[in-house]
Length: 70
Image (cartoon, rainbow, N blue to C red; front, side, top):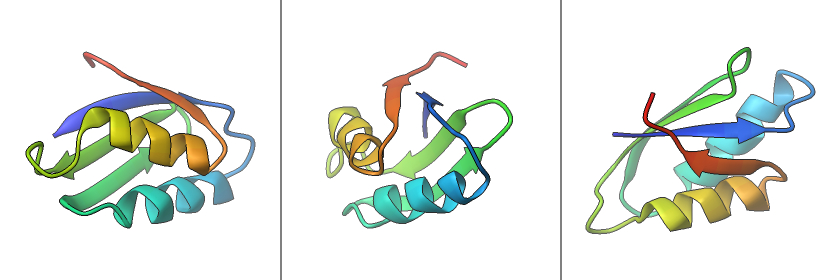
């Protein structure tokens, strides 16, 4: 599981956009986006999907993100 912080959320539908985009990546088993905190939790196989690929997918959805320690 990797945790990210994302910025730029303006509405709850942003959550679905990010979950769809990241969920399409190979090796991703689950994506959970917390609208209020901007926290994105991704369960993924690190040997298949890197954190950089996940950040890029969040970017493709229109939001900036970075890995977070908590």
